[in-house]
Image 1 (cartoon, rainbow, N blue to C red):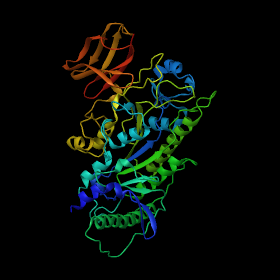
Image 2: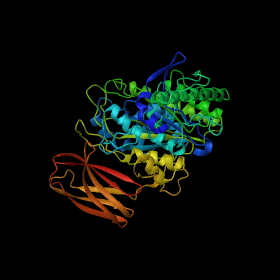
Image 3: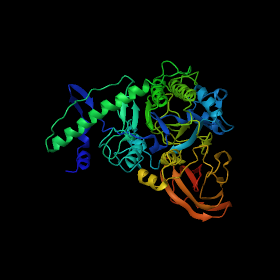
Image 4: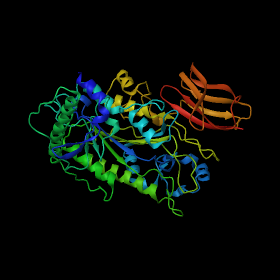
Length: 516
């Protein structure tokens, strides 16, 4: 029997707890090892905000503040408390350390990130975000796990070895991250703390030539590898200590990032670390009434801000600040309007944040359009597909060829200028070549004229409803640069709020309008 095919066919069983030498072990899959040369010595830290972060209470569109105050009266931040990043954008007052990093040119925000036909179930949306699948397809592997399998097609045979002595991926927590799941194996090791250890079964064992024998041999190999790479982790951690004075107390995210910092500064050649922070499902009591810059969401954002600031400071003190970037994301955002419980309900698009010394320190994407009045279920429309962010990390950070990225992500996605060194892509600080100038009349009664500007080349203009579903393709053509105009008829469309999405190769602009 082909051993890899056998493993794939029995993968669901291999995730069950087993006993080995009397110890209960959760088998998350085999654990690979990687050479720094495979990923150019570069490291990615993923921070997942579990529950669906409220993006409009995190990165605030200052030009939309008056309308936000009308549709979010129960939770709106006082305008004079918002920390300004630019003339058009501010952040929550709890994120003062992130403001410092932005001013130090070490933070990038990407606005209105999502995916077509979004799913508002926590479980399903996490599957989509971590696997990088579309919302209609179930994929069991994770996006980074598929990348690692491209580098290590024979894994887990003969791992660890002299060339690859360190874990391929590390999750700090209690369970393995689906992000690092390959088609057959999960390629990550799980740590709860730096004292995690394990003693595997040793000696030569005769395994029967049966399906059970193959499975037992595989599991035994995993356990023996586990013992070796946990020993390597322990040895690496002993090579370094945290020296930053900025590590906060009583901050679970900071505790996890401190472990990551110890391993990175100690020299562990692991290209990806995954951590998470829960609590972002803020349906109720998101703020403190009468003092709305305080509350549950404010506390969570402070944990994120303080932990990342300390992590960056730690890397800088060890001269590792150029080797690491981080990505902060959630499974979905929250709706535009607040609810009657001083909270927000499951929504669609959300901001992502990249941090690190080499990230492009800008706010990428346009501010979401906030009408004066919105329906209860109205959402922030998607402007950037989250898979474009993954594709950009793979291409620019890990230097993966675009043809290989298509295999990893199942499709082609726009590569974004996420690094300061991206001189081959437009400077996002000076965007403006793509613009929806106006929609007249708005609201639309029967028809209207849509005026827009483009730099030239292939352009699409699509119509979406308030739920993020594509309704029509209004334009798909190659146009000269300059001002353009098309006629739009509302025939066949019901009254309500809609969004126009104008896109060329590098930019995507969203504009809200109403049909009455």
